Image (cartoon, rainbow, N blue to C red):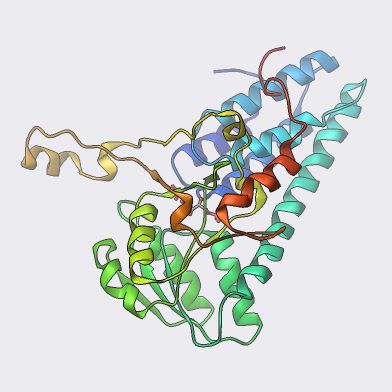
Amino acid sequence: MDRDIHPAVADAAEDIASMEVRGAAAIADAAAAALGEQAAASEAETPTAFRAEMRAAARRLHETRPTAVSLPNALRYVLRDMSGDTVAGLRASVESSVTEFRYELDRAQENLGQIGANRLRDGDTVMTHCHSTDALSCVRHALDDGKELSAIVKETRPRKQGHITARQLREWGVPVTLVVDNAARRYLDDADHVLVGADSIAADGSVVNKIGTSGLAVNARERGVPIMVAAQTLKLHPATMTGHTVEIEMRDEEEVLSPAEHEEVGDVTVENPAFDVTPPRYVDAIVTERGQFPPESIVTLMRELFGDQQGGEPWEES
Ligand code: RUB
């Protein structure tokens, strides 16, 4: 336990690891806010000590969940521009980066929502998987534009994030049909779009999202239903430009099988991957705040955004 880590950072890390805070955008927002709290409460006496404290806080947040690139992207955004010759100056720079980051996060979600909404027509039915605030932003903007939509919501085993999506859509007055994941193919005949979010998007246009997304996309393609991925540029994974792959989080087996059920079933290995990879050929459009892209061309945007990023991570010891 690092005594310089502020309780707000430790709590945020715990909330992210336990999925109390979940979904790529919410994780990024919570991590940035926690860094802000660390900076505000720091008792560091020298700029060197302050920087070390911020790096330690970022490392704690970074080690919580490995797949959503929005988390390291948020930490980088806040720490890369940290500047100042005094503790007060450094603190002010972190606080202003955090405010800016959180504002941009909201704005990006609004902007991509409007772009995604343009793809949805009055009377359309969308099929969703998991719970994505970027995807829901597209629905909300379409509703604000006066379109009527219905939704087929996949339950999303094992954590049932579909319930969160269903609740949100009902609050907006959208008629919802909730189905178990295995029923998705049957109900694709009633869907005009598959609409999902992303945890990471690789340079080749592959989409990493909640486990089950790739199977849904393959089925949707076979049925001729377009697959739209709503993902602000914070979900673009810079390291994939240099050949790195995205780590897929493996979660606790108890999310799948309780100890009592396991006892009853017997000695079996339980695997619980939280995400999967949908190859670009199954994705029709990636909708970002910078416009919509065919997945194969997302690398152009990545070069523009990350082209000059070199060297180690800002939270590593220098
Ligand atoms: C959440 C998930 C969401 C993306 C995008 O997985 O896969 O589709 O994170 O969400 P988990 P958003 O529940 O395991 O975190 O658009 O809100 O960033």
